Length: 128
Picture 1: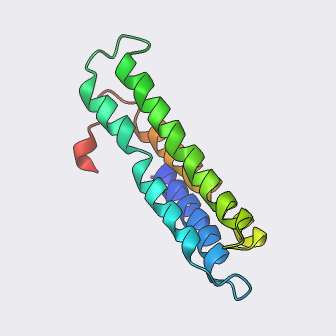
Picture 2 (picture 1 turned 45 degrees about the vertical axis):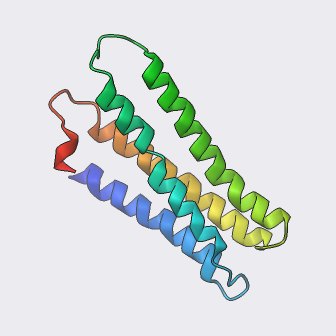
């Protein structure tokens, strides 16, 4: 229960950074909210690979490695998107910093979820 509360709190902190990067009076542009798409897409390759590979004894499989590759691409895109927006002067650099901080916290929260709840053999994704 404590892990779930900690993950919820850290997710809320990450979303607060993201909202501050959009809604503060100096920034006021909501384009950085599109990184939420990357946050929603990042666990999907892992879910597909978990469903497709049944051999848990193998240390690595091609499907799992491909899922890591796609997840890495999604995460790098989520960090690159606000930098590109700031570089072309759509958002300010302060907003970019807040969005990058929010990205770091949210992606660490997602990783923490998989580390805490995804280890057990009796765990099933149907309960989520």
